[in-house]
Length: 470
Ligand code: FAD
Image (tube, rainbow, N blue to C red; front, side):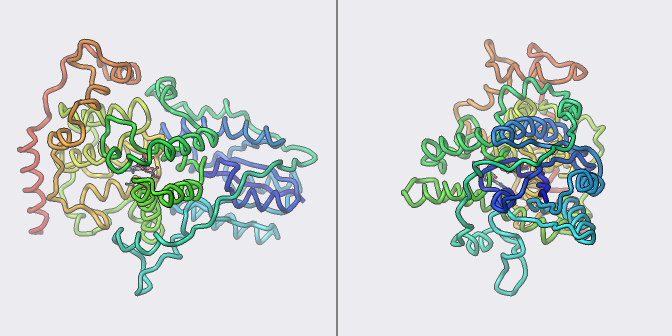
């Protein structure tokens, strides 16, 4: 009987444990993607990005003599219907770790097993299953450095090659049309603009990895913190949708380290942060929604999104160039440099005293590399409410940061058109991308700062001390 291969965040053919096992079984394979409630609820940019990914992945499957069957509805009901239609005896998938997916998948697995269906989940989204990493006392890690020490020397295993051919069933079940799903519908920031900057799919991911290992990794340690240069791997979007496996990236990074390429160890460590984020999400799922340190519940965060300050922050119009450059970069490309993510998050949670969840949700709507675990950990880390977080009183000064990491103003010139005689395409693209309702033009004057940097810092520290007294 055929195997239903339920694809989710694993849109690749290479190094795919479930797909390899299915192909090795010699049985027909029916690849399926289900637009269920959870997928429907994605933010605008990640949903748009998913649509692009599915388009490319469908073509890649077709080249192997297969297809991607698209269905909409609750996962259980869709799988039940497909089992009826195709006579499939097995449903296999790659594991996910966020609480909503875990709840859904656990329910689906139990129900399928009850019907005598071979329901199986495989690893692949992570290097190390979160429950296999334990402290000496048998608990989970709350601090990155010891976590990293405990996994750094492990061998996550070599990546598997893509199967040569995928056996097709005698008859294909019907599929929805991807266009009809209109996954870009909420992308009012101009999908066409973002598309100019975004490459998708497994082949693009492999190319990017190769060129980064050839040319980028050597200078990674020095260049990774400079938002104005292309000094990082740019792999996060591909990793988020599983268009490349972390094992493949790890293997390439490890080889570079063995060859003595400088920067390779630092690069591997960043992959370690991704693992750490998942480790924390597995052990404390409330990291996605609640202050990880409960003493922060008493902090007077502003979370009224109608406030002008929050709106201006979202629009990249705070009057602080580093902050605005980061937010505009994200709006236009679906991505933001890591240094800028830290600076904009610090400015929102400290200078503007705004709840980190407001920022986290905006990122969730705007990032094409959106990842539930890394986003939540990043925000809680900057806000000071998270595990292994920077202390609250360590407030980034966006001007000093600029001086240190963008001395020549490459980043701010790339993203802020106002005040430039001949602004570059990137800076102008922002005005193309924003909805008309924002009423913005590149001829406007650059906004005045919402609050003085010193004043904002002092206000934040006062609020922090007030919290400490409570
Ligand atoms: P590289 O520097 O080339 O790093 C290689 C890979 O390591 C990345 O692709 C990513 O998978 C991983 N990585 C690097 N830094 C981190 C980190 N700090 N935490 C976890 N993993 C990391 N990353 C996301 O993938 N999705 C998000 O939604 C996300 N939200 C963030 C929100 C905030 C407030 C902050 C401070 C960071 C966030 N990050 C997020 C982490 C980081 O900014 C991005 O992973 C990175 O900028 C991606 O660019 P790159 O692939 O070129 O990274």
